[in-house]
Image (tube, rainbow, N blue to C red; front, side, top):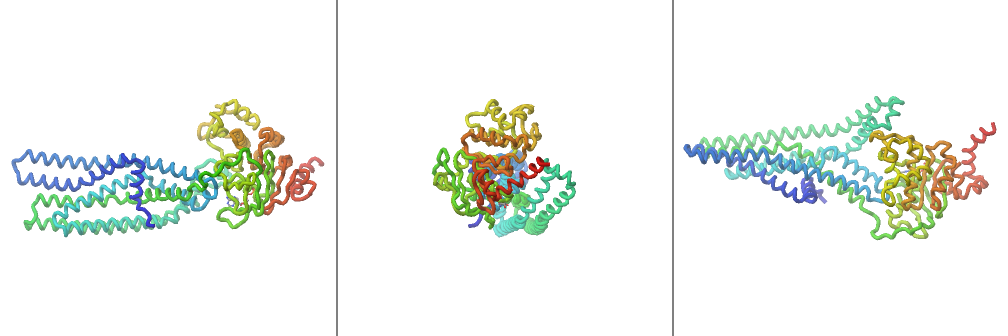
Length: 595
Ligand SMILES: Nc1ncnc2c1ncn2[C@@H]1O[C@H](COP(=O)(O)OP(=O)(O)OP(=O)(O)O)[C@@H](O)[C@H]1O
């Protein structure tokens, strides 16, 4: 199917977003487009009045006044139309941003979001918006429409003189338009490979502009190296764009020469006709002004790029929405409440686009109210199991059931809402502490008293006391607040997960919850965890065996499968992988005690 032309796409979206304003805009454009022809006719009429009626000062004044009005309108109507277009375009931009965010929020699973085509589309949309917004593009459409329709009207006037002159002149202009449009299409097509390079260049540039990288850049003295890499990447990305610009310049010169030739011929023909008595001076004036109006077409070339980029972005947004359309079958049943036993039955999983099995033939049981710890070496697949459990990915083979029902058949959004989690890469929101912990208060806004009780449990109470505006303090210096330490941030993440349990989540996923905690905080963590989670299920992923050993059930993952499971005592007496890992971690301390 042929892709919709950017102008059509922009116009269609503008009418859909703001039908009233866009209709007004279309009328303004039509009016402005008729002005060159009106000016040509009025100029001829003025000359006619002046030359044929020497003492007719009234009609002369009237015609001059009419010409003046047309002239003023020509100066005013286009800017007014541009202001209208900007206003409609702004609404279109807002709608585009909302549509992109809504589309990205739609898939319940991460596979669709992390797919390379999705990231490509999002990146291309961001690039498009940075290059030309829908507002720029819509202003471009107005400029182009006024110039092209105005020129066409001038051509029609010229046809009234001699059709065999008007038609070829119009055809030459049409040819120039096609030439220029093709040139921009080529420019866009050849720049298609550039986004990846631009993305890399932008990443390097952002490294220099963002605080988190500042420490390493200074300590390792990386600024000059990054600047060099940035210069290299961006100049390579610009190379393609530059080569197409040279092409555009060539087309510009060719078109100008063509227009020069055709207009010179027109003016010469008109002048010869006046000399030979075939054309009166007033008519000459009308046709000469009409021919001049045709040249308006040459003033809109930069707008073509804005239209192509802005319209192209709308096309990409349509494609993104199609890609991320909701996959859940409508009316899928909600998961049971409370959640029963969750079972992995022969689960195998490969990340999308990867041929490597992370886990295979995995049989696991998560009983309600129990703490299950998952251990294993780096890359064993522990986090992947947690992601499968909460429905962020679907098993490639096998199935996950709750009380015997395949979770695929349940409403994924509701399934996910039953989990609360602190992942390894939890988000540090640059918002107030209150928002960081209780985004979605279960019933009305969270009170400080409720939050303080939670903070006491999480070891956050001291931090809250220190904050200048307590729970309302923004956790970012960029927003006039404060920065927290890594361990304090982790406790904020933990508090958020616990708050979600209050809001109705039933399973708490903790992936390395004490990785940034000091020994004091780690000691007693498990008892505190159980007291805060009471009868809820907890899935605990940790390399800290001092915590893991206290779990009700411990699962050891290796080579993508469960190699051992049981409680600490049974696993230690089995003297297998778990016992080996446990001994390795505790050995330095025992030696320290001995010596
Ligand atoms: N989004 C992803 N796409 C492709 N492969 C991934 C992705 N996330 C993880 N992997 C791969 O899956 C494997 C298991 O990763 P996972 O994070 O589950 O391990 P882990 O046991 O939690 O490791 P660690 O103890 O280091 O946190 C690793 O080899 C990793 O490279």
